[in-house]
Length: 98
Image (tube, rainbow, N blue to C red):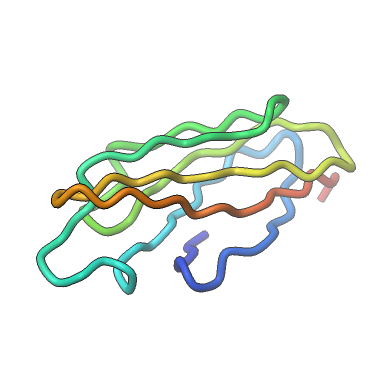
């Protein structure tokens, strides 16, 4: 699933799913600036990790799995850019049997 920084929202995911989410920072980044590093911050109880192989200079890709049915988890992607900007984008994952 692809997410732009303008439309971060809530997604529904099955607790046994392992899904990738691409957070696209292209529109936010000024010309010539790129993502040099990023970290993923997630609520306890859900697994969220970054994908270095799928991410690009403008898109941070993370993998999300687990969680408890009925709960909503907060996932934050914190990027650092090549010129030193630091910013967070947050979205939510609701766990349901789908």
